[in-house]
Amino acid sequence: AKDPVRVLVTGAAGQIGYALVPMIARGIMLGPDQPVILHMLDIAPAAEALNGVKMELVDAAFPLLKGVVATTDAVEACTGVNVAVMVGGFPRKEGMERKDVMSKNVSIYKSQASALEKYAAPNCKVLVVANPANTNALILKEFAPSIPEKNITCLTRLDHNRALGQISEKLNVQVSDVKNVIIWGNHSSTQYPDVTHATVGDKPVPELIKDDEWLKSGFISTVQQRGAAIIKARKLSSALSAASSACDHIRDWVCGTPEGTWVSMGVYSDGSYNVPAGLIYSFPVTCRNGEWSIVQGLSIDEFSRKKLDLTAEELTEEKALAYSCLS
Ligand code: NAX
Image (tube, rainbow, N blue to C red):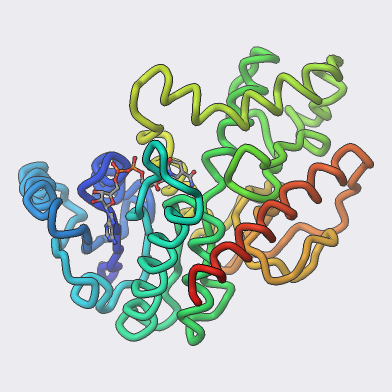
């Protein structure tokens, strides 16, 4: 039997945490033959709720679940973890300035970066979900310099999956037949959902859809605004889809992407596609042997170029704002 993998979930008493931990314990993230030990971190006001989640995990008697650590101590939470899913953060509340929210998250991600750097297992893979996801991941990278930058990513797979879902509904085909959409840039409303290279079977999506107007406007804004639409409908933000996409992200990263298929991940930019180096930016990637690489050589038309640049500009501004919170 395989040794258990230790998976950290921060913010585990929250909405996404509640959907995510049972998925991990059932093998959806790391596979049906991979035992896991869950490490759950939250803050003191949520300690009792966190303990309730732990009780439910015990009650569910998951065969793959070999242990549960539920704690408000970041050191205990980070010790020995092989995978860290960072869902905990400070939400933007009504009337709050962007800078104030950024400042709260910068201080959380700075201190959790240090705990991970000191106590996580070597080669720990990190996925940041909490918003602002790209910039939180960048701060984590800055303050955990001994963790390889290739190991620090943020979640844009939910946006990617939303794009697959929209195309599947529009064409009335199975979502599993749609592939190679791309989310470029920030996990925010400036993200660019791109179907230029997407296919259904062996046919290009733009040829199948034949509705340029929808592709260039309705589709893009629906994907960009989907989070807001869920909040409006549910009075709560996306949780099950976020949790499921986080599992997809880690599974493909660890187990590899299928031949001929790429996915979207927020990763440290090396300047590919003329995206400024040093941002955490969502790119199309393939994964093999536990490492992602950016898909190279895709053609970028003028329309796409503008969208790639716009979301990069927003990330550059966010980065500056985050740094201004440090001083
Ligand atoms: P909740 O408010 O339900 O849960 C957040 C949890 O984090 C709470 O239990 C809170 O106590 C905990 N927390 C706060 N500070 C912490 C700290 N310093 N250490 C550990 N835990 C801490 O939010 P939820 O709906 O679960 O969303 C979590 C985060 O995901 C939010 O930042 C949200 O904006 C972000 N999202 C990101 C998505 C993505 O695709 N990247 C999509 C879904 C989601 O909106």
